[in-house]
Amino acid sequence: ILAEQHRKVKQDYAKVETLDQKLTEELKELKKQYAKMQEDLEKFNDLEGLKKKAEKRKIQLAADKSNM
Image: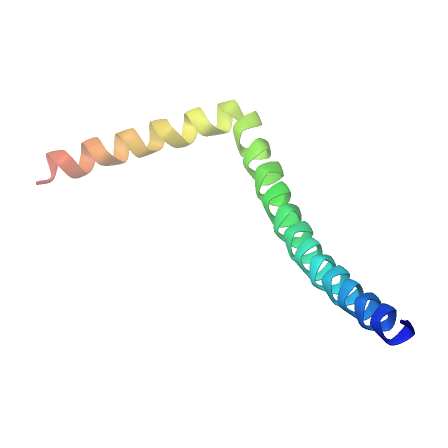
């Protein structure tokens, strides 16, 4: 009986270890995604900067088009 219980506990422990590894990886990935979202949020909060960048791009594309 003890041997059977020991085997079952070892199996359960292995499952817990596997789950822990999966959760650790998922947490890392979520932290990466969160950092990216924070970075994107900072960009989008700078509306004036985005407008200026878009206007510069528009002017550049128009200049490129007229040079063709």
